[in-house]
Length: 270
Length: 158
Image (cartoon, rainbow over all chains, first blue to last red; front, side, top):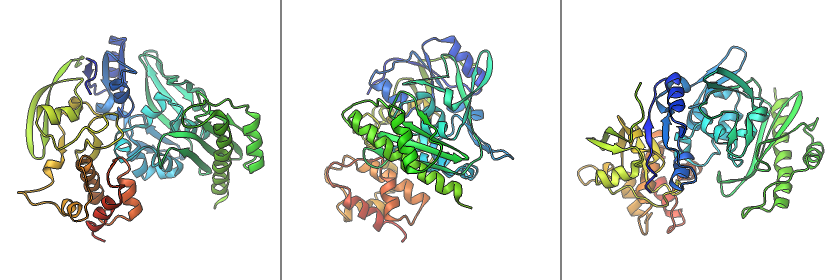
């Protein structure tokens, strides 16, 4: 399919990318392109200009700090996270990336693109909220760090504003994580998902049930406590061709319980 | 600083041959391969990133060429289905597709072959589950996948 006419630039530094984004109001950052190129085909988005981030080496790579904190460059692909020895420090990251779409998409799609698009059916937004990741965003006023719980603003909207770039994601050390999703076919479009982390605190983040991940703190990972927390959240999930709102609300309980149980089991493992 | 451009010079090596062309920024890699280079082995199936018929290897990595701009491939080495056989000799995988009737209409076959080629290079002895996971991004509307999986299995070292 022929895209609308667009101009293109491939900067090699973050400063250059910010300059290009500032130079053209209709410019969009192009990460892995596994969402953006498709929405451009459908004309759901028609940026005037693309700033391809694939040439910026500083946005790639995974670093494991002495305290166990993982720092993941925004342009790191799902496949790179899955294959990374460092990322095994928090195994849930690679496990969830392995459930995204298919091999080809995992080879191109990036953690930064997934988070910045904040499609409510994406897996990484609730996971980042559950593990309490921190996002570093660069703009012309400098860099700032945003906790995952404050990063997602709405459908396709995040704390990364016009002219800004997500640089990296920091995931603190931890091992008590779980994830569960109901999808259309294996690794297909998500109907509802849940990520959970247990580290003294119990956090369950639900996806696909609202514009942004819904964070619950059930106090305990026990099934009844988790069910009660989901019910108390008063979810009003979207109703669409894949699932009614009522069915999604039911599934939210199911996946929340599964994710919390897995997280508790791993938290308790030696 | 390099600024924005609506078309750029692109140099790519496809199946060992280097091509240099001026390419519009909006052109998808699949259309560059098919329309500009006349390499029509890679197919456009869905044009929405779902079917995988356009799959090629970009510097050894399996990608869907409909979700990549041609200008993004500048400097890359690309392998398409045309590059698999040498001097008319089918690869073991291609012969296995033929032997196992792993195609009916053949539309998905170029993508299936590239995905399976990528799998077998990385993992010469995959399990059936690994084969199925590797072919997840490729849709076939004729065979129900059964014979495709059998063909890949027969081409493994196991």
